Image 1 (spheres, helix red, strand yellow):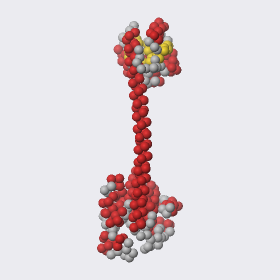
Image 2 (cartoon, helix red, strand yellow; image 1 turned 135 degrees about the horizontal axis):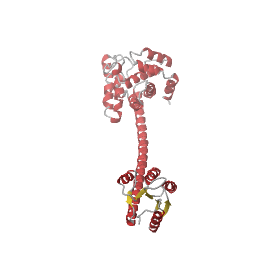
Image 3 (cartoon, rainbow, N blue to C red; image 1 turned 90 degrees about the vertical axis):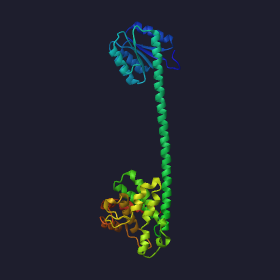
Image 4 (tube, rainbow, N blue to C red; image 1 turned 90 degrees about the horizontal axis):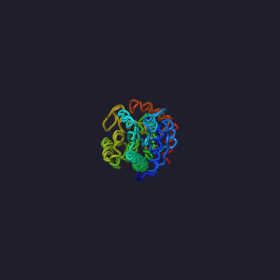
Length: 353
């Protein structure tokens, strides 16, 4: 008897009426519900309608042969257990049957004990396939759920990181007189310019971190220099110019912020090589730092500071355009000029919320 298998239905397909009758009675006695068909075409129609877990079919039949029935039945139900019967010892047909997915190939006249054992094993094999597929589906669902949960956790973590960096950037701005909300505005300008410039989205996060932390090195600058209202002396400028290196040393020690180092360290470089700390020139300057330079200058020109008065957005854009090729990367300037003034004004307005 079939162990632990409740669906005991069998389709018997054979053009010999006597074979169908004998096999049907035998399987019925052993607890099966039987369906029968007299040829392959009729068998396929019954199989499609009933989808029995077990099919026993003759190989040589009129209209549609057993091999074609096997092929089409497996296409309809890949896990179907199918036993092939034949009265001719044909190795080639046997091999082809197994290649097409038959569970076993049995010679006529059929030994009833043999066919019952084969049927039991075929159904147990089918049950294992179904259970394995169900288990894999369960694993996929669980992996999917875990992935979604992990993605949500990562988003929350990134939001926390971003909030922390915003707070740190604001703290740095507050320490430097006249730069309240500077990092927030420059972040908005920088991300907008970056996207207009075609920076891959995967690199935008590092740019954002670098912008928010660009002046973190100023925590190492004495207040007497940082807050001085008058011009700095050459010695004081030398100290002030150490803040990119101080910032790099701080940020590079934090794994998830290492991508911010190019902006933190190189945000005072100039396209013509007259900047610091390394005097890099042209495309030797990291693209994030080149984008930041435009955004930072635009903000500096359009926001009041103790030592300068703001100019209007149009005038600031014109000044940046004039400095393309000297202070700024001309390609980045072109991308900046493609950003509508309305968007820049909106970024400025939101920074005060």
